Image 1 (spheres, helix red, strand yellow):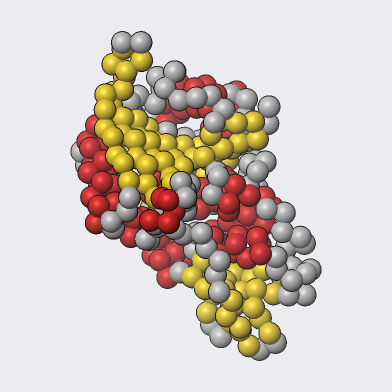
Image 2: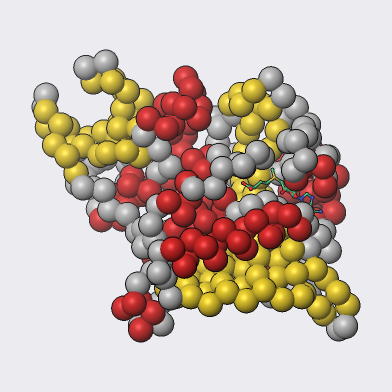
Length: 342
Ligand SMILES: C[S@@+](CC[C@H](N)C(=O)[O-])C[C@H]1O[C@@H](n2cnc3c(N)ncnc32)[C@H](O)[C@@H]1O
């Protein structure tokens, strides 16, 4: 029975402390289910005192299974176990853009990038077409995108992505960041900022970016699009085409104040989601999925699941509390994923 061991990135310990192996295990389980890895047996293990995540499969690992292992949010290196020895297996990643896209920005209220990546992975795995994550055709929306952690992660994977946020300071900060970053990396791109209007009504602002990862990609028309709408996410009728999004991933307000930033706009996530979900779900394709990160102190899981069901979305249940972890005294973080089945 082939066995592969995944060495977790040291950053996982910094983000989740002692919870890192458990969260990585839950992520791999969700991915193994979504990507239908045959007879996958997932467990946490130790070799010579070092933590690994083990995956036993009935057959040799397929190309796409190796892609799944490579794309886990905490994967640092992969080994095939051969008796007492570990043979390095090169990771297979689709990463067309420099990785500093995701790591440069630091600000109060930023959603941790590893957690955002995990949320994107498990949400994509819950869709009816998870392969789109691997082939670059998955369309992503973060309807509370702040300064763009999800936007940058999606772009770094070569995906088209749209973000919405009402905080005009976040919009300006993201616009300045992405333009500077594309210029510094000498990437062929266009970036257009304009007022957002429909039928003569002012709706905020928009940024539309089209970028290619290399001159050859540009010549081949292989470009990615990032769209940022600076507007109220509970009032987006007519701004985006219905049924065009595969995954909605977002970090909801935590109900705690992060200095002068963000969360002041909506302190109660349930009230905000109650108004926003009817509009967000219309943007999802059938078979698409939504993944919400939330603070259990301000949004009880049952109420969140009921809200998703009321909006025609079917919660995808794994073992209880598998992704729940403590961030600090005021944030008991968890995620919930639901699919649009019809
Ligand atoms: C937890 S933060 C997201 C942070 C983001 N993931 C990042 O890393 O920058 C939640 C966001 O929801 C936004 N928000 C709250 N109410 C909103 C509304 N009605 N419309 C649009 N955005 C809203 C806030 O401005 C804030 O940026």
